[in-house]
Length: 317
Image (cartoon, rainbow, N blue to C red):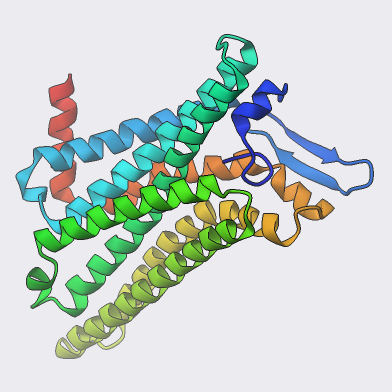
């Protein structure tokens, strides 16, 4: 989905839509306000997508290679990497096909291009939904590991983790198919926006509660060592900074895309909302950037995974 709302980029190419150019420009309708439009060069977009693809492939390969990483937590991280991989692949594929059609290198009937675009859009939408779901699943998994530490391994078992993973993938495919089939219905966009808000609230509540418990634990340790001030303050600031970065990146990368969808519902014809619509490619680029950042937040912080990653890279050479 792209363009103003869920419009079709490939069909737009058939109608003569020009590819993005690398500059900032002030665009204005004859009767509308002057708008700041950030054009993303196609080369930059494709490069970011390829970086994300390589990065997430390495994460999946490292988890598959090391049997010590075959646990529910790392399976959720691996599925997040697969989702981010599909987000990048689908967007790169759509952009590449769009450029080929625009350049006349890909000769196809409009009906064929529309069918191809529908397939790619299902892949994009499904991977986005699954990516958000696995971000939520990782938050729930970490919450259970902290608040139910003694029962964690009996609660989060491999069979249950696989059932949850299967349910997420099936729900993502079905929901994305319905979303693309009924993309011009307001209810579809509202469901997508509500889903994002629910994931944001879920992650915020769980991570804030985990931070509060960690600070409480740090205060208990400080009292035992009679250092009531230094440890809690330093730990609390570090934890708050980590939480701010985690939720801030999530909101910064995903928020503009869902703001776009919200404005499509609320003010599709308003000139100011039209200024937001003109930056849709920027919003997709931010999602690609999130796919690049996710491994650093959730995967590469594990020493075991980093060690395996080094082995994978060395073996590839």
